[in-house]
Image 1 (spheres, helix red, strand yellow):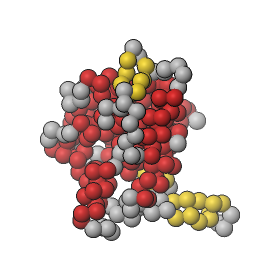
Image 2 (cartoon, helix red, strand yellow):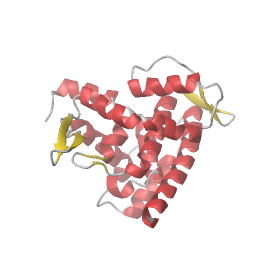
Image 3 (cartoon, helix red, strand yellow):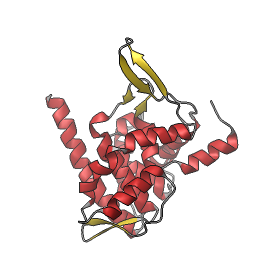
Image 4 (cartoon, helix red, strand yellow):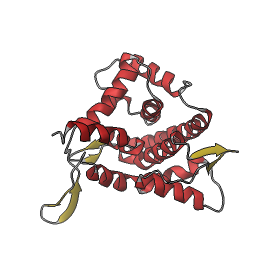
Length: 229
């Protein structure tokens, strides 16, 4: 359902990390298939995207704003303003839930604005309101998955954004969902290489290390809780 070659190409380059992550995990009918860790993952994606853009860094263990210039992306700019406005700096792990809390709905609506998804409001059994986000143009998601496939399965050298997304996939234990049918050991090994590689500058790497460590802990705890209940 392409909206036109040139427009799709522009859309692809404009996608943020939170949007790319949502495209990987969002099911047209059921919504997110990864609800327990969604806020944590999106919070990590927001921080990594801001780091890649040179807007934030980790200093003395705390997330700080280096450049408050708006990015033009509503989700990222809201997060940037929130971090800048805090009276007491906090470490990245303390920001994961706060920055991810509103990122899901806002990123889905942004993907609607871009023409990647469409919004449908209806009622289940005529009683319960429901909002779905079916795919309007599958091209952007296909290209996100192709970038990951090339970097992880084929082994090509990714750009920093793709390596960051691969690191999130690893931390959130999404390998099986994103790389279905691929060799588990090989993909696990490659994801580890990318997560620990030198693809990022010092500022991004500090944010990545902090975010990944905390995201793994939260995702593990959520997985354990789900299995127990």
